[in-house]
Image (tube, rainbow, N blue to C red):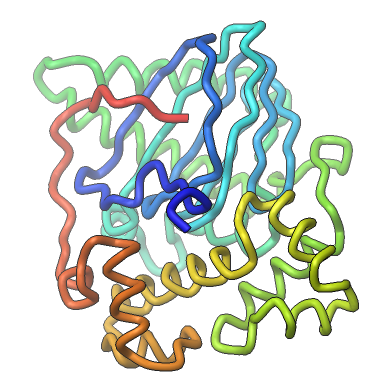
Length: 297
């Protein structure tokens, strides 16, 4: 199961946000994975497609991908060209702390997940100013001058406001030529994520969607990179983590996500997050202290 899950980072993001500007053309095969934090990928150049929850996006310069926590994704990269991108990792608690009633800064991630449209392609007007805004943010993140941390935080929040306004105005989403997905698998994925407390066995799903069991298993693994069982387990644990963060008890989280008994839930949760449910629920983010130098996809 660990090979299937291939979670590059399941860890908790303690900082408010991190920014990476990456350029490389080294041979690299990134496996399907997910993060516990929310992530934005700003594609700049290269020959890259991005698979998100079974949907393959064909990217153009300055396309922006919104990858919510727990979403399974993988870039497919041609190393014949330099792959350049800016990646933002962000802490949900930080976004919540700077949101107001009716103005939730995480709305763009929620709407992208609900509508299964993870790509924002700017209008010509917005595209004329967006690269400069990203450059300004990156500059302040790197500086160690008076007020640079405050400026970086301010610019980051402005950027999130801009993204959310685009979603609120219906600018997110692109025509069908920008992506590809198997309609049946898309339907199955939607059903799974809307019924995490129900019977989601291979047998039940193949019967419900009128697909032979073994054909279904092959198609699902090919589209998502996960077996049906591993995908369902990961989604249930991700939902359980959200329930815990919202104040539910561990037993309530286990029941609401379809686990048959608490002991199996506890074992699976600890294996996924390296924490008990109680430890997970008690975490708090720490203030941002500068740019991390790790790599990101």
